[in-house]
Length: 267
Image (cartoon, rainbow, N blue to C red):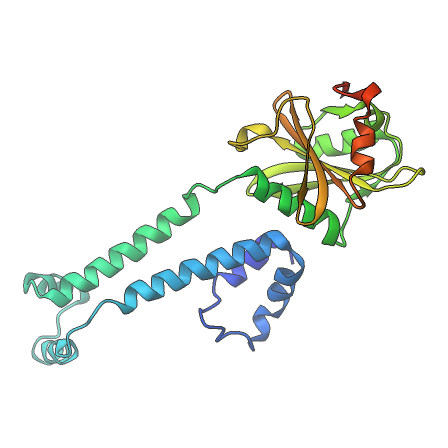
């Protein structure tokens, strides 16, 4: 089961945990526990469902509505469309309340998938740190040659130009690569484990999706989800380096003799 299939199944999940014992949800729920992006989507989905349920519970249906409908059916078995017109022709508050709820539900359903997603860099970096640290599926392909890794990524991401600090540009310690997706945006990852020690994962994606993209060609050091990171922007791409240890290895990559030294690597 992939992430899209899990989302399709989880869209049928009812609020309140009533489906927790249903085996048809078991595999999708197991993916939620392992996939941080799917977990975030599921939380948003549950919050949305809770808002709709809360809105509908606020609509008061007149106690006489059921009796009126039953009486109408007994006296005149009209077609559904005819009943609908007569229902609104009476201009009763119940009719307009029902119409309002239907329109709200339909409108929200149509537009919710098109609501803009907040692509703040801090959210992105936290998600990529979780991917680097927690995801057992660390790389798609084990490869030590940087040219081969870039060629592999280019098939999925149309990515064939990278700007890495001099020490990474040489591909020393490259272990593999991976193609990811974050909020519909393609992300490329390279995994480095030099023999001298350390483990660094570098994530690359389009800078245009971030209103607060990192500075150009100047590393910004920080901590995200408890892990040291370095981030920068070059030629329209945003780079995020995640250390699996302390920040020392990140700063070595930008040691004085390498400061600002970004080399373009192209096929």
